Image (cartoon, rainbow, N blue to C red; front, side):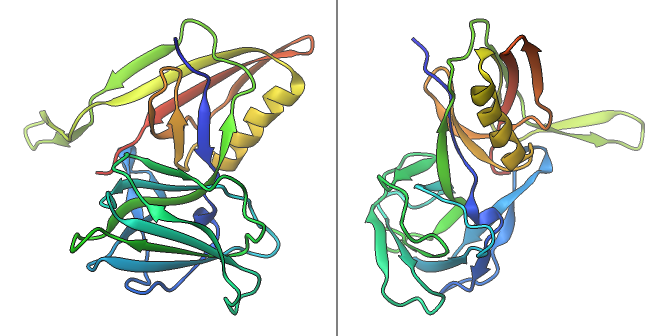
Length: 249
């Protein structure tokens, strides 16, 4: 039995100002499949780091989930705090606890924080382990208003680089395992249900990372295709969605 589609998306770190952390101020981009630049790659040489996030007052997005992708935080701890002002006094601890090995690691705070603009994420790796997080997200979760239709297409794509040689031939180099490419048909959506998916697509624009729980119940980082197909018949909508799994290179 399959499952409905769930997305963890709308990473507030993509648009927020990242204030200097305790060990590395410069959070560089992470490079994924097809050389897409997504969010932030954070690698610390020690075991502890504090990342400070300020959302713009004119565009404060809610979040309920802490997501770590390609991380070394198994057995480590995370603390998420919010503050009423930029002075960062009177902290509210949103979540505090240890992280399991799950990849990706998705932690549910249980509710959306009351304060959202000024946020700290404190990460402490286990023992003397190097702290490395390929992708860090503070995000929301969305459930499709309708289960995907039968006939879902799943492709498994090899990850390869093609090198043009001087003699005109091409040499391919394979990098790691295959990735999943999923194509879905969501049929018979009402206008509100279709609008929810369109809003999700517009927020991610085919370029930002989402974490997909697919029809088989598997959870992995993915990209939405950069086009969205819709078909309207009377007041019902058919929607076509494409996801491609992404992995750090």
